[in-house]
Amino acid sequence: MSYAIIETGGKQLRVEPGRFYDIELLAVEPEDQVTIDKVFLIQHEGDVHIGRPLVAGATVEGTVMRHFRGRKVIVYKMRPKKKTRKKRGHRQEITRLMINSINLNGVAIASDASATTQTTDAE
Image 1 (cartoon, rainbow, N blue to C red):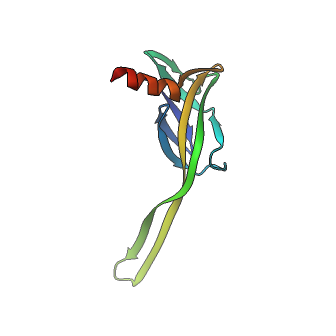
Image 2: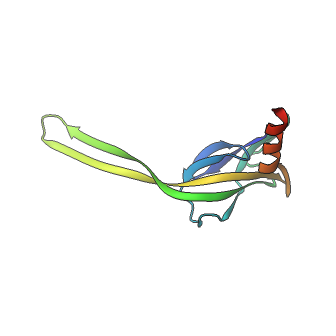
Image 3: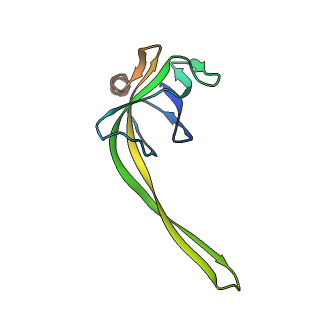
């Protein structure tokens, strides 16, 4: 099982090929390819590559599935005995990203196709 730790939207995520993740909004149309080059760690079959701070030559490729808005978060502020109340709502814009492959120096060390064949072989 291979995975990578990447940064997108100011957050760090542990991603695996063949899975989708909800991240902060990307300025990319749905069904377009995205390459993320902020990779902090790659683990592939016991071989670990740790960056300082980034792994040189490492990228993660994915496909944007869709854009949507997250659940509404209510922010309610009240000062007791002062008759002061503020109620505000917020919905975060989210992009659903399907991870296709993890690349190191231009070679795909883990991809969606290899992840599906490994699960079918195990069954």
